[in-house]
Structure formats: C-alpha cells, structure tokens
Length: 71
Image 1 (cartoon, rainbow, N blue to C red):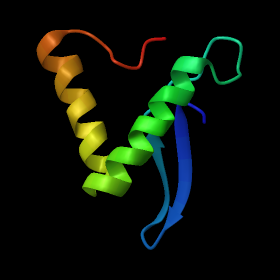
Image 2 (image 1 turned 90 degrees about the vertical axis):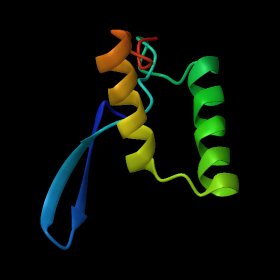
Image 3 (image 1 turned 60 degrees about the horizontal axis):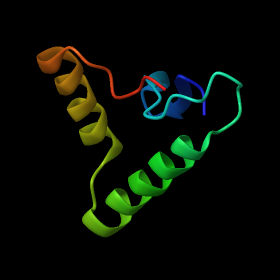
C-alpha cells in the first residue's frame, strides 16, 4: 500500500493517492490494519466507493487543515 497506486483503466494508466498511509517502518501498523478493516467494512456494508472516501479526505484536509493520513 504505497502513497500512490497505479492501475490500468480504459483511459490508460492512472495514478491515485492511497487512502491509508503506511507506517514509517514500511510495514503495516496496528492502526493501518484497523483503517483497512474499517474501509473494507464501509465499502462492503455501505457500498461506499473509494473515490467518495478520497473526496471526504480531501475535504477534511482543505476545510479543517488536518490530514487524516498522517500516522
């Protein structure tokens, strides 16, 4: 889980910012695992798209001046 993830789409190669920022050690921390579990549950149980989650993160960063991705 890098900070940016590349993937192929019909429009070609795209790069998107990761939703979870890995711990400084390069391994997943306990907090990262909780975040991943929470995101998976939101997507599965409530059909929330990652694009909506990214938009919410950007809104929080812009409006409140804090970054939820800081570990």
